[in-house]
Amino acid sequence: MIDVLVFLFQNYYDFRTHPAPDALVKKLSAAGFDPDEISLALDWLDELKSARPADFVGDPRATRVYTVDEQARLGPDGLDFVLFLAAAGVVTPPLRELILDRAMSLDDDPVPLDKLKIIVLMVLWSQEQDLEPLIVEELLNTPDDVPLH
Image 1: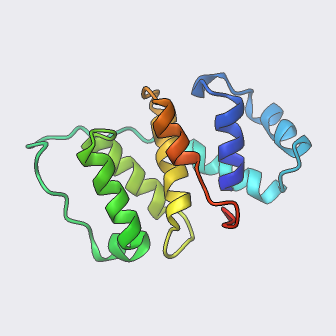
Image 2 (image 1 turned 90 degrees about the horizontal axis):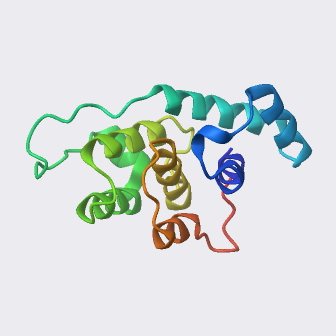
């Protein structure tokens, strides 16, 4: 599924310009993706499209307390990465919540850091955030020997 999401990002830089679902399925199939992976990725993206960043009420300096499930699913590396993104101003509290929601929807337990980075990229992409080239490079950078799925 993650490979499909990366393919979509790389080929449709503007989130709104991808083809209609039927045409997109055909393009992804022609690119060699497994039908089950395509279906999972498109369902995941549909859920992301329908999600809206929550209206954040409160002090933006407030500390986010992660649930036991979030701590277990994201692991120390994932939590550190989310904290880093928030501290660096890359994600706002509402975007952080979208990232957490989308990460928690995966079957991975724990979610590998490489997948979490793709989730961050997809959330920023879907919300039409300005994506600095260095941030995109970091989010897409995965070691050659580590499969995404």
